[in-house]
Amino acid sequence: MEYKNSFIITGFGPFYGVKNNPSATLVDRIKSDCKDVIATYILDVSIESVMAIIQKISQLVKEKEKEMKENERIIILHLGVDPTANQFWLEKGAKNLADFSCEDNNKNLPKNQPIDRSKKKHVMLRTNVNVERLRADLLNKSSNDYYISISDFGGTFISNYIYYMSLWSCQSDVTTSLYVHVPPFNQIRQIWQQQFVSNLLDSKKFF
Image 1 (cartoon, helix red, strand yellow):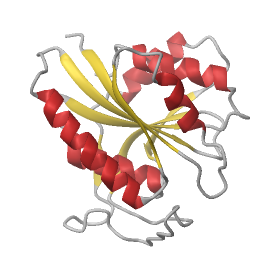
Image 2 (tube, rainbow, N blue to C red; image 1 turned 60 degrees about the horizontal axis):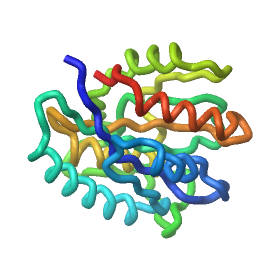
Image 3 (cartoon, helix red, strand yellow; image 1 turned 135 degrees about the vertical axis):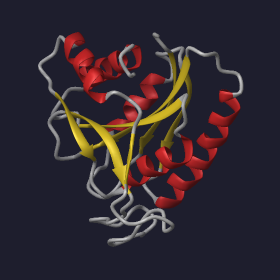
């Protein structure tokens, strides 16, 4: 079955060492570009902001799921920058571990702590997205000289934190989450990154 996908999309603002976060710019551009987007959010880089937005998204998803048809799916797409990357990374899952290498914007600096204290550290949650199939589709659509890779999980900073909470709070038979790390614009130009996101939202190969 080919699914009709709708998207809830998040990005992040500036944080330590990243004055201009490309994920925020990409989310801003998405607002007017895609009719299948339910909502977009740009978050402060902090645990508190993550917890507040996950609660909001969870409630929104519950409301939308009541109206969904059999062939409809919701994808919560989280975008975030990897300042060291020169390509895009599709993250398979998230680990129950907060081990920040620097403070978030509210001075939180958890070290070697579980995100969900009711479960063991290092427990992995996995997206329902078929990331291998999605990657192949994105590479096939790309006309630019950039690369797309797959990672088991995206580190232990705020990206992993929001991804874990999103999978834990929102994933169901009809809703899932996906985290995508994007590079800085000086590695892949903004116009190419916008095209990548557009191809991502248009893809029919999430499942």
